Amino acid sequence: GGNNDNNMSIVRPEYFFIIGLSGIPYSSYYYIFLFITYFIAVIGNSIVLLIIALERNLHSPKYIGVFNLALADIGETNAVIPNMMKTFFSDSQYMSYNACLANMFFVNFFITLQSVTLVVLALDRFIAICLPLRYHALLNNTVMSLVFLVVWAFNTSLVALSTSLMTRLSICKSNVVHNFFCDYGPVLRLACNDNSINVFFNNLIAALFLIAPFCIIVLSYMGIFFALSKITTWEARLKALKTCVSHLLLVGIFFLPVICLFIASAITSLTPNARVISVSLSFTLPPMLNPIIYVLNTAEIRVLIRKVLKNRIVPIRQSILK
Image (cartoon, rainbow, N blue to C red; front, side, top):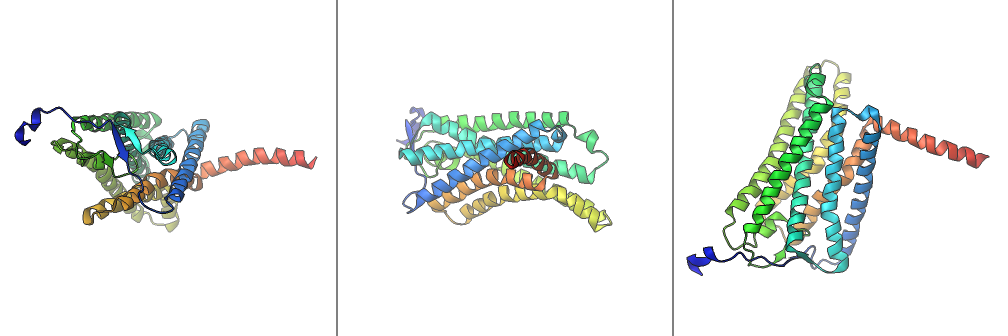
């Protein structure tokens, strides 16, 4: 070895071995639970997409954001769960090199999309409450659509760049990935040549798409609470806060598990199984809960669902009564 390693060709495994949960009894029940969350997430988010697309009243900047979040949720669960199911049900834990990189791209892309969308929704609430008179001038459907076009383009290019840089790595320590999908961090640790640029991009993505969004959201809510403290009546305060409840819940559900995971892995070295369970929960619970929260907290959507149910159920009842 020594220094002549530099001119050696890059070693790429043909396959990665995805560990998933190892050596836990009853792990099959956990996989079945994840499959149920996946099923609910896909159906729930599809319903949200349909409602927003078909209902003219919801063609507003805020709901362009909600629409985008539902898209990100569907993408996220599809990037994570089907692969996991395939590994689990076919008992083949091998994933080809290219499939692994593709999986890594989609999982990371949709997560960054989720966090940035939460930021845009926070800024929407911030402008609505702190600058109510400027709201329609600042945010209209065109502006919101452009914002999301830029977000999609920026996130795609950055995640694609960081994923393509993985091909520089010589992976010769082993081909075992300690997670249930092709996770960036565990794959990085398998490299035996210089991976500092990859580590840099990994940290950059974490900073841009986890730490920065969380800080911006906290700041915008500080602004919102400050604006609300100036409102005299509690009634008006609560009315304004009500429009934020669903968003605050989404933010909590998305960021808390991820932040806890970050802190936990910084303080102690997590066992592979603990990591798998916590990562899989923080990836699958938000997409499942988001549509439920939005549907329950949105007067417009609740009214719509009632209308649909009435139109469906009343004729059925009448035909039965005949």
